[in-house]
Image (cartoon, rainbow, N blue to C red; front, top):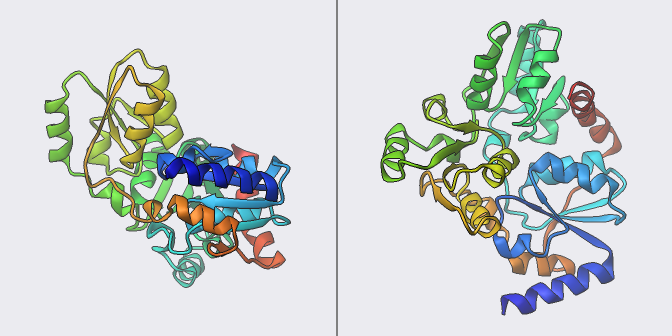
Length: 303
């Protein structure tokens, strides 16, 4: 049944000129029919140079917005209209405007996991893999990092010369992992390397053999001479890596590392989008796109 749906999706996307983008956290059966897979910003960049004018994003809302910002003349469809991101909406534009008015000397750095409305108000955007490099290149030492305080803490530790202010935000999934779970996982798999995402709390990251983005974790595991790994990010990455590297063993750090928003997208959702029965078309005005693109362009300049 799954193969039948996949084959029909492959036929329809080719016939209709649709490019399917799948984030690394979505299900394996969706990644198998995608044209591109990877982190959110990587997908947006790949979509820019793709020949097709219609993009079907299997991920969450802010990712589809970023695709639209980078490819304003293309039609961007979010495969599941219910797939949001709690972290992306933890600070409102009104709250950020208030901070900026009260602290005019700060450069506002936005994690890419933010809404387009927030990006419109920020100076520069960063990804989890580029945050340290880009913040190090900002001439101003006074930085407000939004919204993830855990990724921000990671950057702050690497750049002690900077005055980095944080808000109490972050990914609730990554932040749910406890130190006891880390110790238990290391006890159960003593020979395994621990690979964690910087969205995890500092007390988790201190045990890591490698800290990096989703793509970084995947690349590290593929290239490593090690054969056992504890994966400290969304649980699907351990599954995907097991397919990629069948001769190695991968263990989820915690069974709590499941993103319900990423799991909201199903293979049937993808099919329904292609036959015009589902999905959410991303609509943004040229003015909104221009304002939101400023911080992304600055990221590309510095990165």
